[in-house]
Length: 400
Ligand code: AMP
Ligand code: MG
Image 1 (cartoon, rainbow, N blue to C red):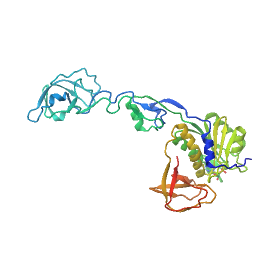
Image 2: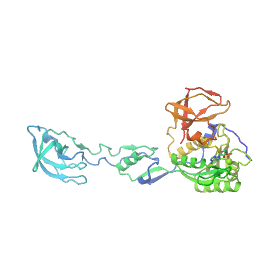
Image 3: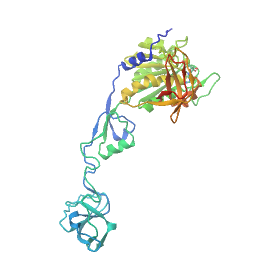
Image 4: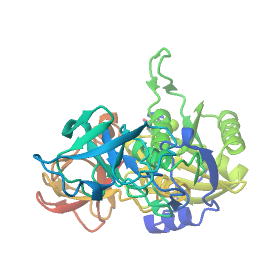
């Protein structure tokens, strides 16, 4: 049986920092890039738009030809052709000439303005201009949207539809991103059944398996849920070995408390080494960090709120480091909505819900699933603090 050797959270985080995993990169197609994190600064290889482009339907002309135009004495220009979007223009404008262009069409050579067709009169092959045009009227010049060589996206950017649209605009079909760490998720306990299965007396539905799997996915990792290990050595060892084989990281929940049937630490010890067993925080004291074949194995507490709090404290920073999202802010300052009591000598993490500028403590206890479902994150109550007053400023660490 394993005994807890309790260490401060900071020491546990140092262990997490020193785990032998480094970010890896891969090149993927833009088609698959949504939600991924860029691994390199990206520069536009082209001018956008790539050519001087008409922004209206009308007549492309040389603005200098129209400087004398007025309502009473319009300028007459000879219409020498038509250019539509997608055409490759070969026309070159001579003084006194214009060309009909549609929106999105490239301008003919020597043209520097497009006058909307609503503002002119067409008489046979002539167009009458009633107002001087200025250079650039009705034109988007090459590179004014995005010039060639301009940095458009930074390493560490998570790609939303806006960023994928930008990459599409500059024609990049492949991007370098951080590889998704593969994370095996295992629930433990004879009492657990999967949703959809019959709930026999004494059984409960597995919550942590779903919660951890999807928390990993939300962060940008690839999660593989391996199922529920029964509270026996064979069952647990089989799933842990499977996790080590298929994945970069293994996360277990439950069975970590050092109780007589809590096998997690003993199995990790058997297959590799236990680096941490016991952290001086509440909830989550019996948390385990181990290493098997150079792969981190986390044993998180069974109570769902404790499990997710410790996932956020210990596992999420590792996943962020591997996915290149370290710099993202996951903490907000709020004011406590009401007074809370803590136990002196315990460093406590309390789930809170955010309402405007207030953090509302949720006091159902970590055994209640609704504690973490209703919570947006948690606050820390330091060891030497027994009471936090209403209105006090607190820092909320956000879940997910
Ligand atoms: P343990 O750490 O295994 O002693 O579990 C502590 C408490 O958390 C027990 O009440 C378990 O039934 C509960 N628990 C453990 N794992 C899960 C899970 N995956 N989903 C929901 N509750 C769990
Ligand atoms: Mg258990």
